[in-house]
Amino acid sequence: MSKKVTTVRMPQELADTVDAVARGRGVSVNTVVLDALTAEIERVRKDKEFMARLRDMTERDKEILDRLAQ
Image 1 (cartoon, rainbow, N blue to C red):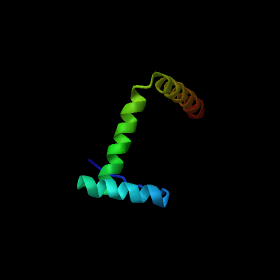
Image 2: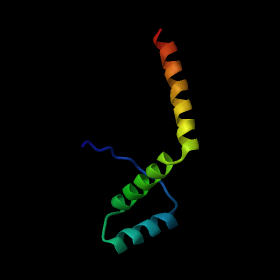
Image 3: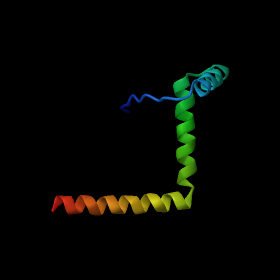
């Protein structure tokens, strides 16, 4: 699997907390961040209103792209 490097800017207090959680779990900060992002994605997948908005946005984007391609 390919990987993408992303820089995340966060308040120092949050960074310190994430570091403490990672050390307490015996994992990297990267693992804590990936776990949190995965949990958030799972949460929004179950959110029917969010998924409906996402479908609407995607349909609008498709319509725009179709017009541009003409």
